[in-house]
Image 1 (tube, helix red, strand yellow):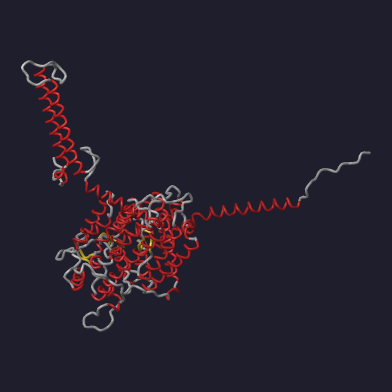
Image 2 (image 1 turned 180 degrees about the vertical axis):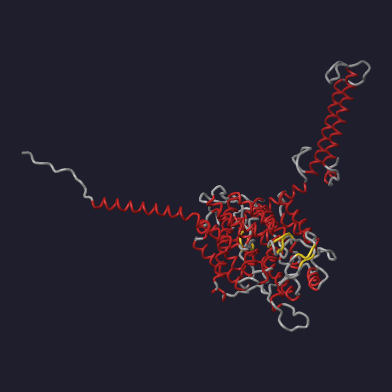
Amino acid sequence: MADEELDKPLSKGRGEVEGELQQHDDMVAMELVVLQQGFAKHYGGGGGVGGGRAAPGKSKGRGEVEGELQQHDGMVAMELVVLQQGFVKHYGGGGGVGGGRAAPGKRLAEAEAAVNRSVAASSVGRYFKLEARKSSFTKELRAGAATFLTMAYIISVNAAILTDSGGPCTVLDCTPVGNSTAVPGPECTLGTSNPGYQQCLARTKSDLIVATAVAAMVGSFAMGTLANLPLALAPGMGANAYFTYNMVGFHGSGSIPYRTALAGVMMEGIIFFLLSAVGLRSRLARMIPRNIRLASAVGIGLFLAFTGLQANQGLGMVGASPSTLVTLTACSQTDPVTGACLGGTLHSPTFWLGVAGFLVTATCLARDVKGAMIYGIVFVTAVSWIRGTSVTVFPDTPAGNAGFSYFKKVVDFHMIKTTAGQLSFGGFRHGSVWVAMLTLLYVDVLDTTSTMYSMAEYGGGTDGAGGFEGEYRAFLVDAGSTVLSAGLGSTTVTTYIESTAGIREGGRTGVTAVTVSAFFLASLFFSPLLMSVPPWAVGPSLVLVGAMMMRVAKEIEWGDMKEAIPAFVTMALMPLTFSIANGIIAGLAVYVALHWYDWAGLACGKVGKALDDRRRNQVAAATPEVGPAPAQDAV
């Protein structure tokens, strides 16, 4: 085989070439056997090269035949080498028939290694400490992609939840009924029947999609560049639900107006920033009883799951009932104002499509598939984009046609128009605003602080005291991101537990967080697609997020009733009263009620010990020292 033929790419597969080599070896062996048999027949002996003597009548001598055999063996060896060289050149490897991997893969690996060496030696690599943390540039990029895939759902989910608050939309945005010129009443904000109010909600959702992406982009970028940690930030689940359903209320039906609530979020972020700056943040987190902290996470998970099951915000499986408060719905016909079931329980097509999406996501989670939360949302959303079906998100209505026209743009950069800067500090004289602020602060202290420590521990970045490198800057970045988020119209920003996906992929530096930031930047240009994600695609994700938050329940001390009862009250009242604040306040109150006797006894013991010590000191001070008796003179 000529060298120029070896330079040509081989079209044969690895197994085929190995088969040819084996076939060639077999033929060589047969030729050797034939030659040796002829040699033995000519010279006699046992068939070996050295056996017997020359047979009479043969013209070739023994040395000549041995020379032919030696020459043949040399040619066979050369053919084997040529074949193996061609095999190795095509497949790569160490020169053996079975060694190595594909040459394209080898070239890619070499290019990747060269890039990693170049970046590690650059000022960027030294700043992010790639070599010091035993990481590489491409590994960090993969880690950032994995983190984004697992948390990208927050863009549509957060916007959908916050849109339920109504945002800046009021009755003034409602379309008058009939030919009336009067301003409609508050009932126009309920249900989906008023086109004017629905258009305002659509604009609000577009703004909140951008606000969510920008807050996540800036927060993650700052976390990566300033704290050099592989942690991704975004508006947090739980806090957004509390903001929407407890502070502002569904479509503004709560006690705190949207603008005042946003001002409260900003003030909470400023307070949080100051606490982080003076080092009180971690101390506050340790002051809350551990079992109450764990129960708060479980309660928020139940709260999110309940939200994801409701008719207006998710799957539509749970609805109102005049006798039992809540009941099974998923009805084919519902009241457009109240959402009450009018018939056909469990006959809703969108509900069953949402169930299919739930199973897709749950299966991916069970198999530890990266980006599992996204796949269910994408599946349900893609089916819902098909017009003319019973599950379409673009029905043949004025609102549906307008939504489809915007959807067809696919790529569009949307500027925030209605939610940014909507702050009003005039309502701070009401006590409900301060209660809400303290609740957000409490949730932020527990959620973000504990998540950061957990992520640092998971990545092996903690020191002997439990702290981690970049801790101080990370706290400041987190709190500052909340201030920015409130200014854009969104809620508190937190460190996402989904960062574990990137850490599991090998992310150890801020390059991972910067990569996540780049993905959020790219998402800003796909608002038409993100705007068209229906609630029955988001609901399953809320339920599964709640399921994942339940895992900490096993760490609660259920064997100690003084700890178990307050924990249960905390987690139970959050979904049952539809208020995170109510659960926290009730849990802490029960905790104090069950422990006050122990605390009083402990305090009395300390006071008694202090009094005893004081009396002993007083007695010791009043008693003169007894010295040795004076010696008497001898008589």
